[in-house]
Image 1 (cartoon, one colour):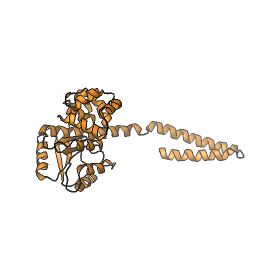
Image 2: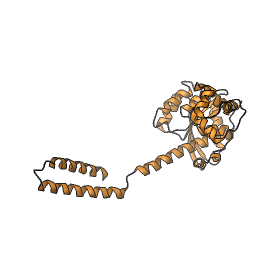
Image 3: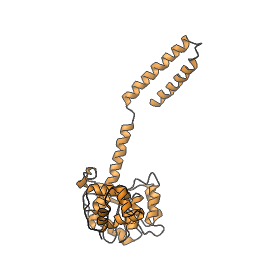
Image 4: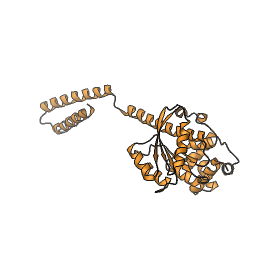
Length: 276
């Protein structure tokens, strides 16, 4: 059974849905869903995978990858740019596995990696709190807590939750992989099966997702920043308004609206200070 069929079947079972219930929620026929789960259909269309992604809350990129597609196959050009350097935190209590992953990354001649290491879940969390990496390689089996516990704490922290996490699982751990993805992991790799090229590709994609998120946040900040020309114009109108209110107050001292005008003047002055 392929990784795609295993992960989709595990996702449905963890969601406690029957095939017919999945059909009703996704709009994909139960016969077609069964064929995918039984590994009869190995490359579902983008539209089908997109529906499955939404149904089971699995990142679309993972389903595309497990189906044999590349990012460019569905126009995600934002993840195609080359990266020159990145910080990767490898969390694994097995020294030899850590060295293996470091060796894999050394073959990526297009990127210079700064490698950090952690042997326990607490070391991992403390390292991320101190200096969030561009990508976290997280082993499921750690001595003090499992990878899902670590991922849960990461997902609950505003600072840590933006770190792309790749969960390393053992063969046949599809249930763990599904749980990890629902907690925000951007990918999962089967430890005993992953090749060097697959590992490098997964890390590259994880790093690019963080860069993309940072770029989106930067653009959002620019869009929401007040326009300086508009601010000057508003301040000028407020100043004119306060002068006009002062004049009205002098000429209509006995008017019942004087208190309201005075209140409005004070509020306008406070707003002017905020805009300066």
